[in-house]
Image (cartoon, rainbow, N blue to C red; front, side, top):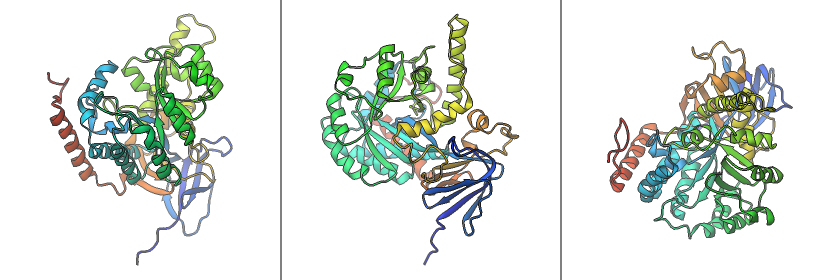
Length: 445
C-alpha cells in the first residue's frame, strides 16, 4: 500500500508577497498549506511533519491570473506574429484553419496552452473560446482543462467562421452549468456572448459570467443592456479600446469587469493614448491582464506586465507633452502586479478564493527563484517580479494545494507526447485547409 501524500506543505524562509493589505509582506517568512487551503502566513511557522519547500533565495506569492486567453489557438503558435489586420487574422485562424478543428484539436490546443501557462506561473486562466463548434468540441476543451490541473473559467462562444453553426449553444448552457458549475471543481463554465442579449439572459438565469470582446471602432454598447438591467459585475468586457465616455460611465455605474491585453491591443492597433487600462482605472474599475493570442505571443504573463508598465507610462507622458493637464500619474509596479493577480481573480468571480496569500483562501501559490544571474540581488521584490523574472525562474507552482511544477519542471505532464500531438494537430490543420506557411516569414501564396 502506498503512503498517503502529506496534506501539509510549508514554504520556508522566502520573501513573501501576499497582495493582501491585511496580511503583511515578509522579507523572510513562511506560508503553510493544509490540503487545498492556506492556513498561515507568518515569520516563523513551526509545522511538525509538514513537507518543507525551501524558499530561501525565492519569492513566494499568489499564482498569476491570465484573464483572457483563446486557448484553442495553442497549436497555431506564432502563425501570424506580424499581423495588424483583425479581419486578416480572422480569415486565417477562423475561416481557413478553425473551420477544420476536430474535438481532438481542441483538446490538444487547450492542453498545450494550459501546460505552458502553469510553467509560467499562471494558476488561473479565463479561456475565451470563440470556437465552440459543437458540444463535443466544448467537452474536449473542458476535459483537457480538468486533466491539466489548472484553475479555469471556460467561456463557450460561437465559432467565428461562417461554416459553423451556433444553434446548439444556448441550449447547451444548462447542461454545462449542471455538469461543471455545481461541482466546486477547478473548472467552471461561462458564456462568450458578445452582444447576443437572449444568450445573456439565458446565462444570467444560470448564474454564469458573460464575456464580450469590445472594440469601440467596431461596436457600440446597446441601450437595452442598461434599460433592462443586464449589466453588472458578472459582465466581462475585453479590450475596451477607444470607447466613448458615456460607455465608460455606464460601465462604472454597473461595476462591470474589464480586461486588457497590452501586447495584443498594440499588435492590432486597437488602443491609443486614451489607453483602456487607464480609462478603467479613472472610472473606478480594476482592470485585469490577459495574453489573448498564441498566434503572435504565448503563455507568458510576464510579457504582459512589461508591456503594461511601458505602455501606460508612454501614453501618459505623451498626453503631458501634448499639453494636457491633470494627466494620471505613471503606473507603479505594484499596480501592475495587482492587475496580474487579485484583479484577475475578481474578474473571474474568484476574489474570495484566490488572488492573495490570505489564510483561508485556496492555495494557489508560486515560488520564483531569485538566485539567477539576471535577477540577484533583490532590492525590490515586487519590482523584481514585474520587471526582471521570467518563466524559467518559476520554480514551484501549486494549484489548490497540489504541486503542478517543482524544481523548474512540470509535474505529471508528458511533454514529449504533448509536443508530438501538437505538431500532428498543426500539420493536420495545415494539410486539410491547404494553408501554406514558411518558417521564415509570411504564408506562401
